[in-house]
Length: 296
Image 1 (cartoon, one colour):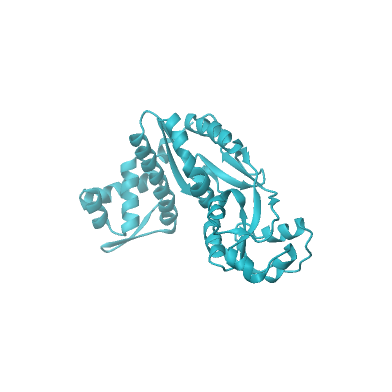
Image 2: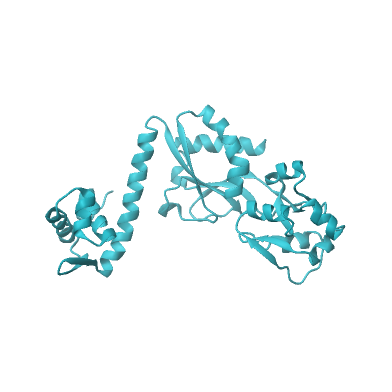
């Protein structure tokens, strides 16, 4: 049920308000909206009267937002952005559907992107927009239909569909391995280790799984697997990397296993989505496809 008309101002009033709030000038807003200054001023007054709240402080020829106006501007700007994006998506694909998918950077570029052509070939009416998200978010506040999630089977307010597990290996360049004469898991404790900020305990877990006692594990921090892998290739240390994401580097000989000790991660890959979008046709088609791809 929609709220009272009083709390649903017209887009023309909201657009005028957002423009003045962003530019800090009625004159600039009028120029941007191709209206007269008096017309913009009337729209602002009409909005304030409809809401019963003063949004701007008028000082001679200038205006500035009240505290309430500033808070309202942030909300309205995001709402107008989402309306604009929805309209662009509909115009770009009026007969199919659009899936806004949040991806993990390296998973998206190394695993998903090379396979997407197969999905699009069998679902020609669907458009997929990819955006990067490194951590969980609130689907209610973001215009995302689904997300690739790595972690435990928990995402507040979302349903999760299992995709795949993951095995990791301590990887480095061949020259680095030969230089340090690495022969056992214990040898890694004395070497520079490369860490991922989103998996701060990964090395501790790896040493624990391999029965190696340790006190503190330090080293360089990276926010993405791709940069950690490049650092390992450059000889900066040993990185704990998912095997399926570095297949090409291992085939070329750029990376090798520092020690032959692959371990399975305690966390998994999932497709996360809000329950109310579960039957959305583009999402349902993508879910069925990616589950089959992951199992293959």
